[in-house]
Length: 395
Image 1: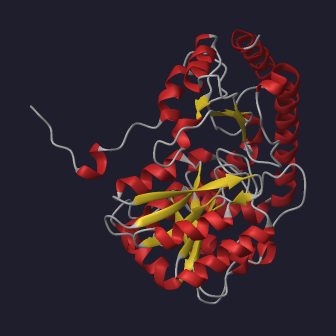
Image 2: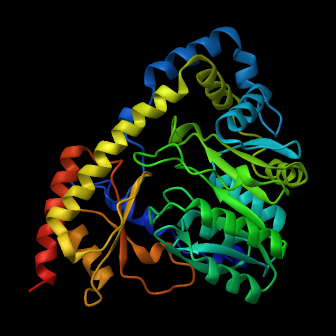
């Protein structure tokens, strides 16, 4: 039988990251292409204790249907936590608990965009979000990411020349894949442009707690006095990606429409997962846990970057990120990036080609490496292999 697929899906290509990850099922492959948290960051004993407590005291609540907006105790706790720690949330805002932060992108696009509308995104950007926007028939317009975030002059030009732009998508902290952190000056400038031209901002912050050096920068949402910022957060990097708990802080009118969209998708995020997060936040020292995982990633990031310096040297250009999970490297112009990536995979090191993160098939000679998934030993081994592969392209 010949199958017919919707136009929304037929034009989408499989995630290059997921396709490359298939190769990493081979245990001999060193997974620089992944993005999983280090297993040492998981609070396993705390989760085991809380799970037993939930099923001892509240099994029916954990196993029953819940409301679409989310488990009420967690919503209240999140609202207080965001306001107290980051100044996020105003009287006009509402919290929705989602099935991971990726669902925020889906619900925002579903609620706000018609076919042919434009989403303005950083270039490069996270492939999962880009494919989400594409799946709704959105036009994508890219704005180059500099060391301190989006090129503001280019952003305004793109806004002026786009067809019905609906929102600006940004990952301001340790951007995936570039690792760049947007300066406070540029965050204010992005907000001012969105306000000037009547646009919304979709601020995606999955890595904000993973800062390993430097000072925290206020979120764009903390500047929001006009109800124009949708903020996406997640417990995937903080607690566990497998529990699939993320959240939205957005103006209540937008949140209400996103709630309707969520009812058509998964009804609600699993109540047990939400209860687990709520009780974990209540019973344990969250800031101490954040410091623990920061120490893990500080060591691993510095290890990888020091080895980039010693093994690759001037062969690549990169900016050492202040946090997050990724390092973005640029090859010399005379080196074919895709060929280099394939050569690395043939030598048992998986990288992600930069083309996976581009907006409209633009050329890039960059690739992305992850330092959170491989062990310290594998980071050392993998970087030494990259140093040997490099020798094929120099001299």
